[in-house]
Amino acid sequence: MSDELIRIPAFLAEETGDYGIMPMCDFCAEVACETADMECGQTCGQSCGSQCTVSECKQSCSQGCSQCGSCESSSQTVYTAPTFTITNITETGADINVSPGTGYTRYRVFARLTSDPDDVSYDWTFSETTAFTAEMDSLEPKTEYTVNVCGVIGNTSDKWAGAKTFTTGGKSRPADWSWWSAVAAGKPISISADEWKAFYDRIDAFRIYAGQGAWGLYKPVSKGTVISAAIVNEVRAAIGPITTAARPKYINPGDPITADYFNSLKDFLNSVP
Image 1: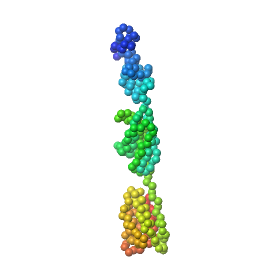
Image 2: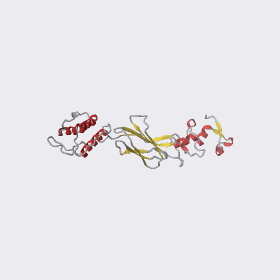
Image 3: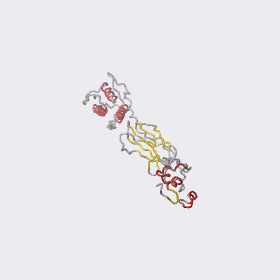
Image 4: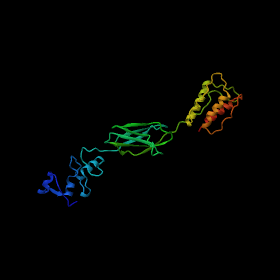
């Protein structure tokens, strides 16, 4: 190529004499990055074999001058990656707090199950130029997620902030149950309707914690109602699937239900890990 001659613009004619021609390499180094309203800097020229064209110069300037060396035009946009932090992590949610980079008007916030590279459940685009927060919800407890944020140009994800992981918390175990009333051997058993309902509610809380769902078969008792074998056997059945402890014995109709048995139901529920 160094032997090839080309006709040059008039503004360079005075440097080439009356012939209006000059070697290709000289022209390449002189004007290739400084035409078509492009001011890419004096050091943009390279040897003829690897010279940037004007279009290449423009592209590399938009990408941070990675190819053309010194892009000195004041009109060139500088693109820098966003940053982010992860806060307010709960068993089912987290906040992704994004600090925008420079040059972008849109940002992509992406999160997935770390264990599943193909998961695309959380992938949003935000048109923000100031700090913003993406709120994640409906997450799985005790599960690791991978998060990343990037600037967007057109339909292209450009500069990524860098992936981070976080793990959601576990569900909070309900408090152990204690009878409100005095339930002791040799003493009359007096459990109110409200207390019995509260006991059922605590059973459901433990079942939900264990992933079984509410029992939903509560049989209300009223003041003065004797808690029957059928009722305590139902409690025994509701607790059984959520603990590996030995169940209290099955009560046959007409069998007495002692204070010890009520306390065994309490201990059975509290054995849920």
